[in-house]
Amino acid sequence: MLTQLLVGFLITFFSLAVGAGFWWGLNALLERMEDWLCRPPHAFKSLLVIWMVVVSAMVIMTLGVALWALVFHDLRVFSTFEEAAYYSLVAYTTLGLGDVVVPVERRLLGGITGANGFLMFGLMTAMLTDTLRHIRNLHRG
Image (cartoon, rainbow, N blue to C red; front, side):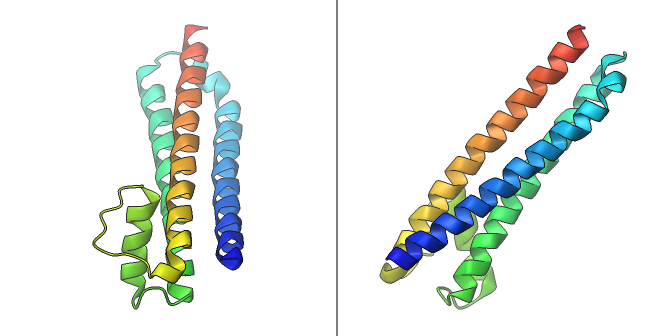
């Protein structure tokens, strides 16, 4: 049990660090683009920024799911990588369909996967909200 907690903590910490790194990188890029973003026309520029944030969120989520899938596959929790990836996606999004489940001795990792996804969705929501607020403020002058 302690090993599962440690593995879960390390994966969650790593995925949150990657997510925060993406957010930092996106902010740095937008800061460099700030002069251009302030000049009209604004509609296309807003759409571009939204696209950048959404793509970043998709990459962050895909990396998180893939990391969990690799761990589940490496620990031989599932017989195929596809099954590990499917379970990781369902658990990470906290959908929890229940058609694929982890063995009882590994269920703690399944819960941590869901908690990791829940935290990442919070981070991605904050990233989107903060970026759009910042762009709106830039456009207002």
